[in-house]
Length: 471
Image (tube, rainbow, N blue to C red; front, side, top):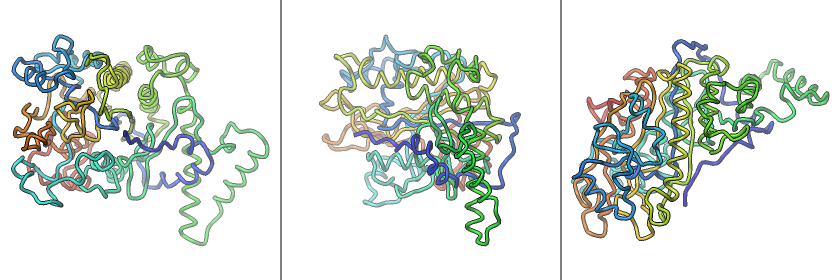
């Protein structure tokens, strides 16, 4: 089973959605300052991406260890995309990203996962059930998605680290999601602004500016007049203000959202970068569609408003328990298809930013439920694990090299949670935490050290090791 977030795209097209979603907008916001603009783009890979096949060691010793354990799942060394002299290579399906690595814009970050504090194997094995040192419900899709999105080790967490950062930094908009709902962007008082795909209408059905039918136009005038009236109850005043703000936001963003490749409002630069992924007026894959939408929103940042913005995109299908390879080829099958979709779309997005002169102002990064077992299962797939490798890309990234600590490739070894033969699967104990990963991103984004501690409560447990150095 591959849990994915519930989509609100259709819901947002209705009037009820606009009104219910009006709590997105409030007072005390930033004004647009394009010169100081920065954006973070989170791409969540639901189901748990197999990071062990995404970034593979190429030096003889470690590659032989990798190939011996991975067996039929091992990517042939000659097909890997070399990452310079780093001793690692990308899955061949990610070849579109190679030029960005060579240009110093792409960096793999090794063995990241939810941690309350640095944790050794001996500590992990010695801790009693329910210990605060052990993240809740390890190896569970829904729980680990929450831990990654919330920057927490408590599966009951409600707000996401992206949402908390938006609230603390006072961003004009909440987290903008182009991939449905998720905990990542939830704040105490705002929820993510969930936008539909390019070409879709955004706003209350029948109440948008282009809805010129007289009954609808009169209805909109009546609603505006109703909300403009003074209210005798504070809650009613707040509600009316939120509804008016929601209408204003939908009217401001509707044309930008609706634009599709090749139309009068499209950017030739963005269209050129995404050209291999465009078919007619549509994008060929869901992740290409989402990143195209984000590219438009970044370019249209004055219309979107605010000098800081966090975006959330998603892909599903990464729960590869079986048939991870196709016809015995580790470079075919479902995982290769997913990685090619990700790599092609992410490369196009980054190329668009470079050509727009915005590469230094936007940093994109992956997250996923968890890594997958180093040892394959009996169904030509992999099972749920813990620590995982991630990709970070952008003009400000310390790219062209790797970051973090790659695990020791030994089943039952110092990084594997297992001891007895039946539990030696290569479920790596993370050597870097989600908190450190998020702190590195948010420090670049503009958060102070005190703000980082407020957003990421476990960060102080890592002492002076508060940055992973990739930005």
